[in-house]
Every structure is written in structure tokens, then in C-alpha cells.
Length: 155
Image 1 (cartoon, one colour):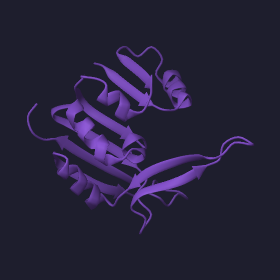
Image 2 (spheres, helix red, strand yellow; image 1 turned 180 degrees about the horizontal axis):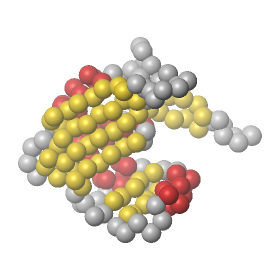
Image 3 (cartoon, helix red, strand yellow; image 1 turned 120 degrees about the horizontal axis):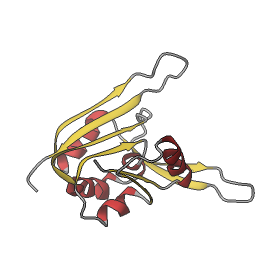
């Protein structure tokens, strides 16, 4: 089996290498998912984004590239924070950096589960499910948006 990990963060890739040292068939790449997938002819059984590309990349260019990267019947699944009520579409935040540096601007795309389902279906995905699961017991109050969609159509 081959597993490919993609992240913009060298730190996150370092954590992956520490967590799964010597895993046969694992590749890690420091880039963004859209660039990686658009530049390859590799076909995947599944593409999974954990608080990653599906949240931080405009779905209009991302969803067709993911769709084309999946075998027919392949699964695209992702998780991210659910949207803040009333704040939908592209949102932006300033993330502080070091002293004397301008903050980084981070964009993210937030939609309610039913809107994600509609967007995915408009891009050729079928058997779409999207829901927010409750947070684990404890002090946290924010759940997690879980989305699963299957590549429709033929190769």
C-alpha cells in the first residue's frame, strides 16, 4: 500500500516522520494539496484532509482536482471545525508571527454540512454525507465537521 502525506508545514511533516518512522510505502511532501494533486497523474483510492486543504483551499479549484485524482468510486473525506453561525464562505484571520513581522493571513472556507453536500454534488461527487459530531466529554464545546463523498462517473 502507498500512503502520501501533504502539508505546507515542515513542522507537521516532522511530526509525521516521528510518529510513523520507517513505514513502507509512505511519502511525505511539503507543498499544498492543490499543487501536488494537479501536478500528478496518480490515482488514489481515497483522499483525506484532516483540518487541512479542504478547509484552507477554495473548493472551486480544489474539488475538481481531487475528483480527477480519485479512481471511480474513490472516497474524498475531510474534517474541520464547523462554521461559526452566520459566517459562511471564505473567511480570513491574521496569525501572529515573530516580533517585527507582519502577521500571516490565513483563509479558510466555512459552510454548513448541507451546503458542503450541495457543493460536492455540483462537482460530480455522489453518496455525500456531512454532519457535525459533538466534541468529546470535557470542557471543549466545538464539535467537528465530518464530510464523506464518493467520486461519481467513469474514469
